[in-house]
Image (cartoon, rainbow, N blue to C red):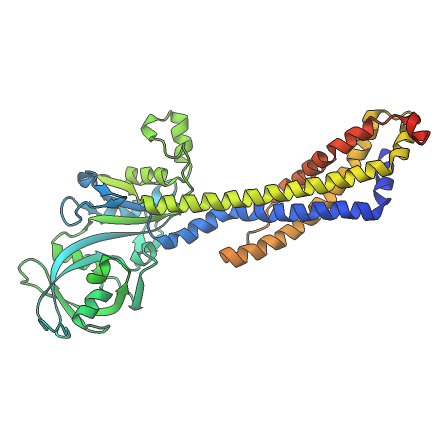
Length: 435
């Protein structure tokens, strides 16, 4: 009987019910789109932020005396201790190994460079002082589990632009900086001889590309790491390691010193992809290493991601508030129109609770219908927003569906609370007398 009364009431006054359902559907569509994008935006933006470059720098612990001014590291890179590159596969064994998207070791060597193609006006074809940067281009790392991981400087420094192509690993080739090439009139395909120390042995390299980076690399020669190790007389080692990792913004808990944490707090901190917890894990597997966060990159990522999420939550809140106001206005109008019906039900013995429950059930039925329609519209809207802004649409989520239906029910009850309270307090006698 109760369900029959609810169904009969919903089918009457279809225009009013349609307006209520439409208001709920629009509000829930915006909420669904915002929730879908918000749940997906973290991973999307984290991957987009990798275009900013590495966010972790690994150096020998023996060189860990701080020397930073304005967030820029001024410690020397050509002197001190070294780290073995044989330990690098261990990076893919940490708890957050899947968050390590790229890494590249660096060894800088001061060399003399000479090329018959050099057109330097002041001293054509003579020896030049230059820094040779040894690193990986696309290096295949054999992991402890037998898998392969391909990484290199192109992944940790994605803003580097190469006119030509990267050198091939283990080849006698290099790329040269744009400033170096312009100064010496060199181009792709030229030969360059480099030597270190007493220059008793010169290594001939073929130039495969011209690098534009906007940094000091434009005055340098970039070659395979093995060549730099050979010239420096330091086989199997590197001086710096750049790591690019997917992280979440650090909050107050994420910035705490792990040494001050209790065991349960340390476990929770270690199981969160904070940039500091990933740095801590890397330090555990690389003996003698000091892992520092490149704050300008990490903090910039965190600020942008936090602001985007705040904006999405504000849009969701505004949509829910608008839906609640629309439902409240519709519910108030419905209660006023049905005063006589409510008075008759009370005169026949229905209590205030029964009347309120009946009216609330009607509103909840509309909420489920409006929430379902809103979810479908919201998924379409989320796909449009995701493809336009992030280049990929978020996948439909059962969690978002449950949240949308729950929000629709909550918004409906919140918007209808005052009208339903008034309806439950109606006295039948004055209403039936027409007062």
